Length: 104
Image (cartoon, rainbow, N blue to C red; front, side, top):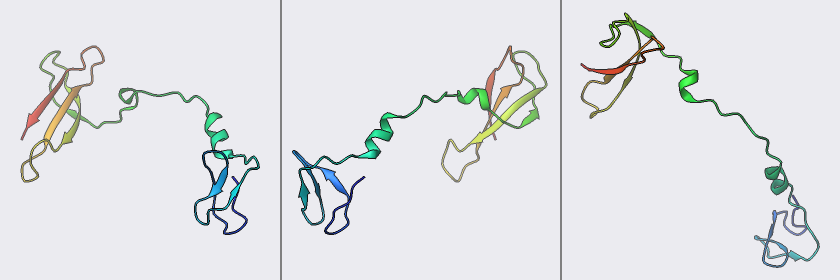
C-alpha cells in the first residue's frame, strides 16, 4: 500500500492512474496494492456443518418415536417477549434424532 507524499492519505486506483482522495494528488507511476494481492492468496478452509459440532445439554425426556429416555434441549423465544420461551427437544439416539417442541 502506498501513501500520498503531500498529505499521507492512502493512494487509490482511479481511471488511468493512482491518486489521493484527500488532496487530489495523482501519479502515473505504477503503485502496488498489496491488499489486493493478499486477497488472491487466500487458502481453502474446511467448513464444518453446524450439526457436527452441537454441544447441547441433555435432559430426561422420553422420545415419542423410539421411547429413548434422553434428549438434547434448547430454548427459543418464538413468540412475543412477554410470553414463555418454546423448549425444543431432539432424541439422543443417532438412529432416531426425532425433534419435537414443548410449549410451556
